[in-house]
Amino acid sequence: MTGTTRSSSGLDDRRKRLLFRCWHRGTREMDLILGRFADAEIGNLSDDELGELERLLEVNDPDLYAAITGDKVLPADVTGALFTRIKAFPIADGNA
Image 1 (cartoon, one colour):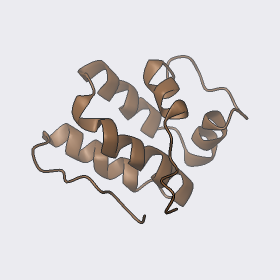
Image 2 (cartoon, rainbow, N blue to C red; image 1 turned 180 degrees about the vertical axis):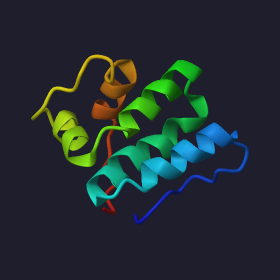
Image 3 (cartoon, one colour; image 1 turned 90 degrees about the vertical axis):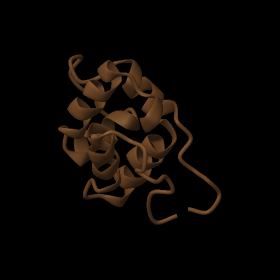
Image 4 (cartoon, helix red, strand yellow; image 1 turned 90 degrees about the horizontal axis):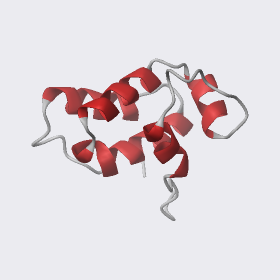
């Protein structure tokens, strides 16, 4: 898979922007992790969760990837329940 499988149709502007940002991180690994999560979940996230996702997207790719793989701890103001969900989200689809 090379990109989003979800249409941004029907999403508000904030969600559209976040979906795009999740798929355009700068490193392919983070595109796949955050992009696939966003494809599946962006339409169901609460305002608080959208805020957490926005804060996570401000973390640079190497640090965020290291935190997702367990090699680094991010500050508590960046991580929360959504970060835990992202870490647990299955990213492999058998076609990667």
